[in-house]
Image 1 (cartoon, one colour):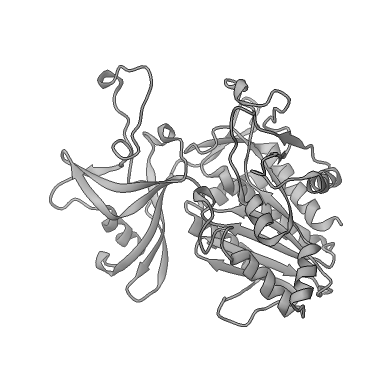
Image 2 (cartoon, rainbow, N blue to C red; image 1 turned 90 degrees about the vertical axis):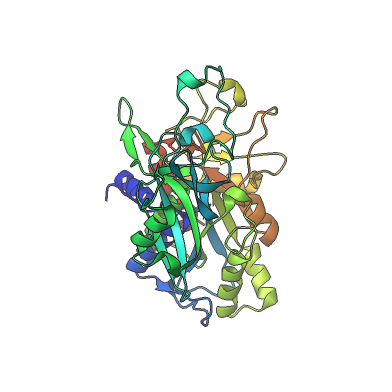
Length: 420
């Protein structure tokens, strides 16, 4: 398998969190995992199990000798990316143009979304309660204002006024966004009772650079971690060296908007999986707490590479560089969950994999973001480290990463799962 090509294909197949969750689940089922319905008795038999809830996917591998004396080794990531979600009343027209009404999701770099051919992707719920995934293909564009009409030195975009996509010309017989969605799914528009749809750039990801060492693609925050976690889990299982711990892949939704949902890291989904698995293995409440105490989590989310044109935004002693290796993220104010013990565990995994490692600490004058790491550590009391591949243009419609970093990240995550 060409791993970089597989990564780009994974991104292309995952224009929304719902697609990403389904692609992960399908690949795990193809590898022998058993689908788990939440309304069915919980399965913790030896082997792999996978569950999808909306845009989140949880998978767990139970070794033959798993017991209440085991722990959990968790790879945490998130499936969602910034963009623009379709509003409940999505159809409008202005000055002869048909437009889609959208709401900003997360913190996209607004200017990066201008003049790109956009798809609407996600899920629709039909009148009979069934759920269908949908990806319209390129039907929308947010046009930039011509320079002749705005001679100001700085671009200022209003999130409400300037970011509504055009679909085409308005008028009798013109298709609305829901017309296209319904046609794509193969249903009547009136059969759609609800939808969760978000924009995605339709330009394929590609390898580029003078030596072909860079990757340009959308949604690498955080599909870079979801894909790496998937491959690492499968490789760890294939190695036959997983030990007695239960291996867990936890890819959450809604990280970009705070994680507070039934499918986000601040919700109960991971605790549900760990609790039900532990109970199915024979642990009582006390035994489950002991399992948690033996557990650890790698919160895998994209990191910042030093920017050559804005080096002053970075801490002068910490300049992670693309293709310099995965980055461990540290913050004294607990914006990241890393601490000395979990950082040391990650460094051991990198050494075991023969992978270089870098560190990120924010400039004191430039507050950093956060991840699922502190949420997971706080909710469950499980020791956690925050890591990721370095990116430029994070939250752009099209981000930049390194080919080597993505390969190394899989190796390091696999080493974390199998080294004890």
